[in-house]
Amino acid sequence: MRFLIRLQPEEEPFKIPFNNMRFLQGLVYRKIGSVDPDLSLRLHNPKVPKLFTYSLFMAERRELAEDRSGLLGYNRGFFYFSTAVPEIAEAFIKGLLEKPEVELWGEKFTVEEVKALAEPERLSGRKFVTLSPIAVTTKRMQFGKPRSYDLSPAEPGFYELIRENLREKYVHIFGLKPPEDFEIKIISSKPKRFEVKPGIFQTAWHLVFKAYGDEGLLRAGYLAGFGEKNSIGFGMVKVDGRKERVKRRWKEGYE
Image 1: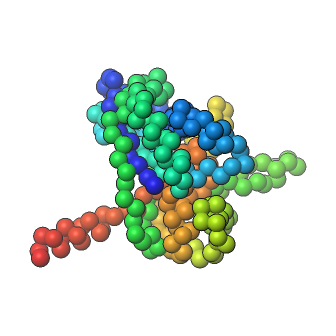
Image 2: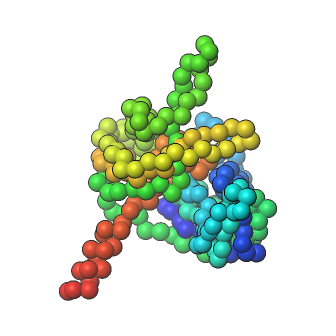
Image 3: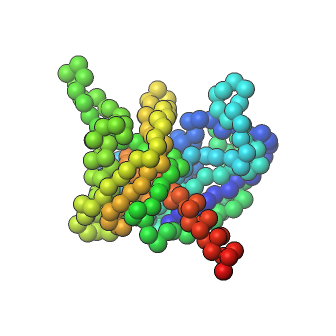
């Protein structure tokens, strides 16, 4: 289940900090907690799989702020939310609609629209574009101690850990033994460094890629996010349907 959330700003232009993911994380948990406190409490348990993700915050028109500290947005702001758990979707969306006034990083908005989005019937072989960057982390020894290390698409472990993460999500979503059939081919990549908590940084990757394999594995990534740390806003993707739209318009125009 995925949704487009549009927000009307109280004032224009409105600021959008580059590191906006943790503010959206707070919004998600607040809205879920206002409707279903028990669910919110369960999701705060680090051992519980979250199975939701969301995009970066965007604006219909934007420009770089003069001090280069973030962006200035115009018209409406918006972001996408996706989850494999109907209970999470119901609580979050109900919380948004019951109290549509929202404050993020000191800016005030009103939720103007929550739109449910259709899901593609087929995912294998499609081209994907990240709506928030994909994070993949491992442990490496440094000065005799294991340290977190952010993997890049140039390293084989990046793909291995994405596949294993998808298999874990598959088990939680479908309750079945996960398949192995999965392959990802990167078309383009760009690193981004985010401050996920004060003083704590994560390097993640905006990607355009093609993915092949089991539809269930790909559906798990499409709904709950590819890679790690999805509940703090990493790993949301969309299907790039530009060629399909062009073909459809051509067909409709010439039949």
